[in-house]
Length: 178
Image 1 (cartoon, rainbow, N blue to C red):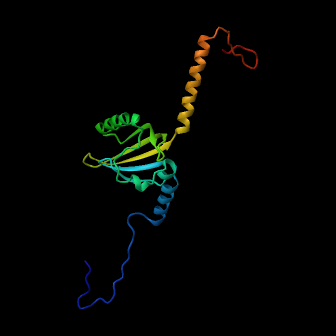
Image 2 (image 1 turned 30 degrees about the vertical axis):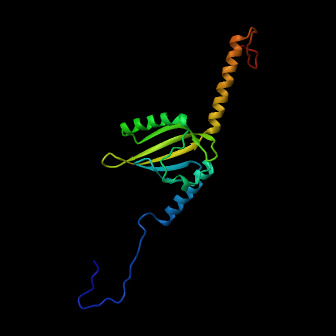
Image 3 (image 1 turned 90 degrees about the vertical axis):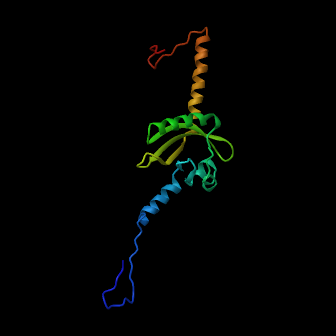
């Protein structure tokens, strides 16, 4: 409470106001990070409703962040939804603080990207989920390359198993290596 000395009537009030939610440099650094990260960051509330989406949602997925906020809908490929639910249910049952998954995520144009998904679950002191912070990293090209390699190796295996020719490999000195 503000009180004047007895018999003195205040004529002016001088106040010093200080931001307590973070310093201006901290806010600038946060904004710099949020605006320039290539990972998509999504924050969900306890009811799994999206409450915040990073600006990278626009660049990576083609969705306006504001279009997704407030939505409980999933952007996962329908074939990946059940596995993601099972993983999340298990994490909740174990009071886990985090989990990882790889799934296909729908872009605004209807195509899908393979993404590595990391989820940090924020628990209250009473053991209730408060938030889930989700980070999605585009790994589509890596997944496609891995699939192409598996396909190529499978074809090569069929060729080797069904060939009547003798196939061998030698090193630079002419030694048999395979």
